[in-house]
Amino acid sequence: MSPETPTIRTEVQVMFFDTDCAAVVHNIAYLRFIETARTYLAEKLGMGLRDMARSQVFPVVVRTEIDYKRPAILGDNLVVLGRLERVERSRFWCAFQIVRSPEETLLVESRQMCAVVQMPSGKPVRLPADWAVRYAHLTAKRGDGTGGEA
Amino acid sequence: MSPETPTIRTEVQVMFFDTDCAAVVHNIAYLRFIETARTYLAEKLGMGLRDMARSQVFPVVVRTEIDYKRPAILGDNLVVLGRLERVERSRFWCAFQIVRSPEETLLVESRQMCAVVQMPSGKPVRLPADWAVRYAHLTAKRGDGTGGEA
Amino acid sequence: MSPETPTIRTEVQVMFFDTDCAAVVHNIAYLRFIETARTYLAEKLGMGLRDMARSQVFPVVVRTEIDYKRPAILGDNLVVLGRLERVERSRFWCAFQIVRSPEETLLVESRQMCAVVQMPSGKPVRLPADWAVRYAHLTAKRGDGTGGEA
Amino acid sequence: MSPETPTIRTEVQVMFFDTDCAAVVHNIAYLRFIETARTYLAEKLGMGLRDMARSQVFPVVVRTEIDYKRPAILGDNLVVLGRLERVERSRFWCAFQIVRSPEETLLVESRQMCAVVQMPSGKPVRLPADWAVRYAHLTAKRGDGTGGEA
Image (cartoon, chains in turn cyan, orange, brown, purple):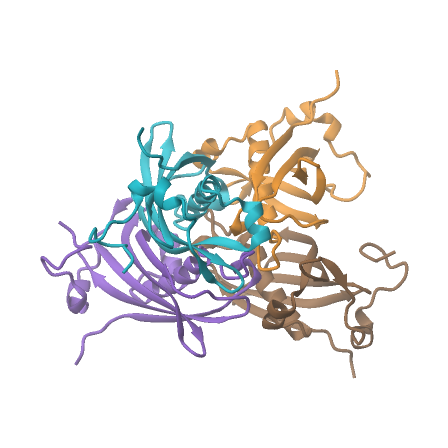
């Protein structure tokens, strides 16, 4: 059996407040689309929104990389495709693609590194122990380059 | 047959970016939820987003009234219920309620007066002639108080 | 000596993220401009941001009325003029005008009713006792119409 | 004489709408702070906002990298320090640091690659010819690694 890779697919239609006066979606708006996808992906990973509100344990974005390839416009139907990409001891990477539906044109690619913290102290929380087993195929190996922990 | 009143129902789950450090949904975020509902309501009224992007004829908000009754928090499932409330010669009012699902607690009530304008001139455009017939029951009568045109 | 009416004046230049694809400032963006002004007005009234973050006692918006009269565009220099308009036992109204600088064209008018609450309970907090004296000229009289408390 | 490196310094105080329910500034809000700095930096480079609105020639963000190091909270006074970092034939990189004032704690670091486009076609526009001379010290050399054009 092939190993499990958590994925998510969310949809959004471009509203006026997503666009700017260049008549395309504003670069910051895509990060809201991605946050919605990341939040539902986190829910699949066991971090539900209502639990977070109660426990004050939150996944936080530590680094974002985002490439804008083609613009979206008002009324476009967008699909955000996300997946857990890599797991470290106390951090994980998610990868996202935003495509225009129905023709699946790639508009945006992004990667985000997240940590889990206990608020309000901001103290990092270790990732669940079973992640190392469940997502062993996504675990960083020694010497595999950028993004790894020392 | 009872007259037609265009209505809309949209759903949204509260994300981190909708909340603020008082741990509740920020007052401005509700207006994004309402804009999404209003946009789909406008689509039902014949003003589709893609057509607008092409024709540069847009409905614009002229006045917003919004009452905040109870707060929503992270993860809440919200339903926006909108309807065309009143039709004037060149303006129309929409009314909205935001309720928490599933128990239907009323959180927010809002009314927005809209006009239709041709951009970039900003010149007002008359509402479609058939609205006076289709939405006759929503048409302002002389002397019926606030919000009417002179 | 004439009685004191707390006022505020803030400035903002219109950025890309304030505009939408109709090439004008989006209706929601003005509420951010107003919130900044209201926050500095609250500071003048003794409710400083850093104190709020610590005490979790916050002024919250209970109702917003906003009229959009003329549009602003990218690069416009806007001035927000705010003042304490009316004081009730546990609520107060602020009034705002947004004008384009330097010619002072009126673009937006708004009124917001605020309450002060202790979070996370959301329990209302009485306004400081000395407000009734300091702002006696802004205090609601019985029978003076809309917006008053029973 | 040492060569000119265009720089910018902007200030912003953290408002409620910049924070989320983890009681810190939301990751997306920092990108608004950076956009304001980038916009004023672009103005220094000869791309004024009002000219852009007229000419429909805009700098657009092609890639963003942002590292979140320490959180800001409500009321913090933040300083955004930006500079032109690198110039290519048709693209340029800007680098930003966000520090908390007055103690200059580094909170956020970001780099953005921008192109200049003619809207609505989206066709790239060559950077002004004199940039290669004025910013020769920021010009990409052959074989100097990531971010260069083929």
